[in-house]
Image (cartoon, rainbow, N blue to C red; front, top):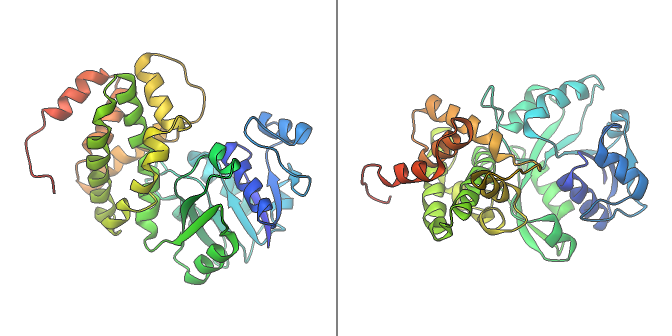
Length: 318
């Protein structure tokens, strides 16, 4: 299978490494002015892994269009602009695989909706989601992930082609739930980091329990299966997001409440804004997401905001 990966950040580079590792023909695209791409072209490695010579590096989108499968791993808020660029290439009969998590802030669209609305009907779209960090995979530590798509054949073909001893893939059964659950777990990761920064890490158990219920309500309101929140796309990704030292979202939350700078991308910073918008659209309560939003965007005091969560009206757990 000939595969092109768009996005030369840490995850896109790992996806490239992994697909080459399981013996697919892989190319990696990055913009010519990208510092990540410049380093890869010069050294064929970044600070996490090294790519074999069998991987083709390119700065031309025209090369991407030659593949059977196009994997995308970029900032979620930049997906619409990328699809507009790809449109000019008149891509037909390809499969797009989104290895990224997020919700478009301005519209509330899921990422597969953006692709579907901006590509020819002959193209298919799938998502690749779930737990795992580059550092652990690269060192041979296995994990389980999910591939989901509205096209059952595409889903089956990708699971068959991408599975290995390093990653066991499950068949997703709810595209809405898979996407929303995966995006929202980054917000829970930021909240977890805030608890770490406030020396309240013992509350992570409650955060995971109530966070999953919150996300399940949103998934159901949007037409998905609320049980998806308890799967690999969300709850199953908590260890990697809520506890791991490698989690960018957790580290961002901790650094934020400590007043420290943090320069790496924390996708949950943008996702929480989209979640708060969806809260109003679907007339449901997302108290944890609202609290994270208030701290990040309204500059609310983190500890007082946590106290406010505890002072909410008493209710049954389920």
